[in-house]
Image (tube, rainbow, N blue to C red; front, side, top):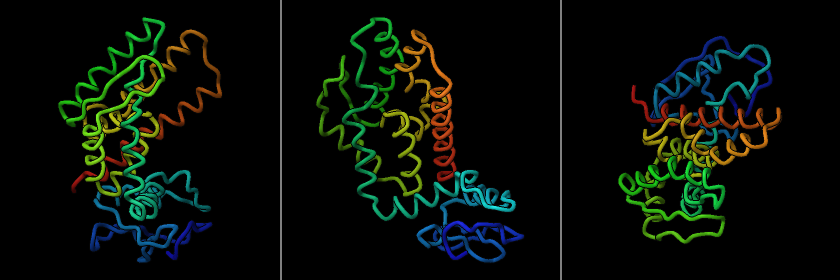
Length: 239
């Protein structure tokens, strides 16, 4: 394939092909390339097979919105790999203003709910990541230990481009580096992380109700978070 999205399906067979550095996807023996025309080579056979299934499912006009794994792999290759340091820094910066560190001043019931849900994760960050973070009531920024932030940055920096692409969404959608790492490292599921990240919103909904537009937007973001978890798992899976 010459690059970019082709308007209509032109192939009859999709194959996963072992290549140097991982696995490629071929359409009638022609390798798929990213929008930037780099070879679409992914780190695991499981990911390649899942991407191949997206291509095999296309009929008539290609619909990129039905190919989330392909789009995430493209992002890992075209965006993360080409500006790795910047993306790592962007993700790591969430540690300095992590959602879990900012609690409600009132009502007391909401603050108690946040503490019960979030304190165990901050404890886990100390134990598993060596990164103690301070929490505070209100929105005034609280300075964090530079050594802790450096450890979190180092943890992100050691990941592959594909893992970083997944973590970018795990962190960005939840607003928490600790939650994103908890999903990546198996401490939490994405579904649970979604609920943990929505304590404030769910409290407001319980008080004032919700609307259809907000519900639809939230569901779209939840699905994106679940996809990021799947992409992470496929990037890690050997076999």
